[in-house]
Length: 383
Image (cartoon, rainbow, N blue to C red):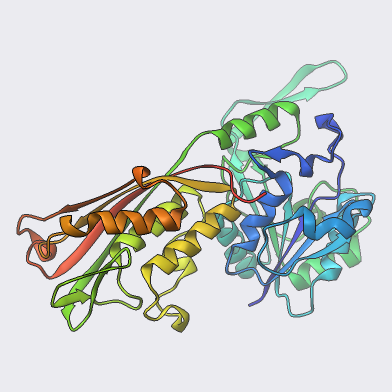
């Protein structure tokens, strides 16, 4: 199955009252557009990528998404949202089976949400992420600003993007109903009588429309992001014991697809988690021959690139390695140095500790090695 994404960034954002189109406004060192692009650029299930821009910005598209690692196409938007989406859809090849449509003004979309929409769209034809209304919902006569009814809030859901569709369905919707006045593709499907599946949205997947929204988004990015990671491998004879790129003198090593470096693997998961960028299995699957015997430090470096592309930089790391033998203490400083170099931080912000399991379970019997990690990220990344 091939998946394509169309990111709609063709508007002016007049309600924000800014001199720039809102998708180009800064969010902690990266534009709103760059952050939205980064989420799909880093997602392994997205095969084709299109950005719809104001006509005058199309030629500068590559510079506007600086930091993207995969090929992106650019096209000019139309007078209405549906016109812009239709132009973006035309840029996708005939190989695309599922299309996602995403608003550039939602820069906090996560890999997990993208996965949910892809899976539901592939299974049902049309899928929209949404969150339930938690406040009491009033229907209002806007002419008099008086309440006309209280709506059952369990029936009220707030739609988000990306919205996903089987390509054949979205093409037909635009052929038959493309002139309809709609606010999103879900509404276009409703008008045509196409069932739309609701998948769980993300309360943090906010849309930036007003100055208050922009201030809130900047506040979110200003706060540190914390992630945790864990890894465990059986110890077997004939494998080297490598932690943070340092080979320890021992007659056993971790059994794994890569080098089994639990220190780097747990820290990789912690960093990806802090950036809400998936996990080590998503990016470096143990069924992919590409990662056979891959050094843990290499995977960690790739994770650093992913979180930087998402607009974050490593700030600190704390890893606890649990094993009975050999002693970790003589090697800790060398490990801290290597990890600090890969993260691009001072060694003073990297902590590595060794613990035993006091003879309890497989780790305590010397049959396995485990590690727990915590990573802290701050806003930054490539601009």
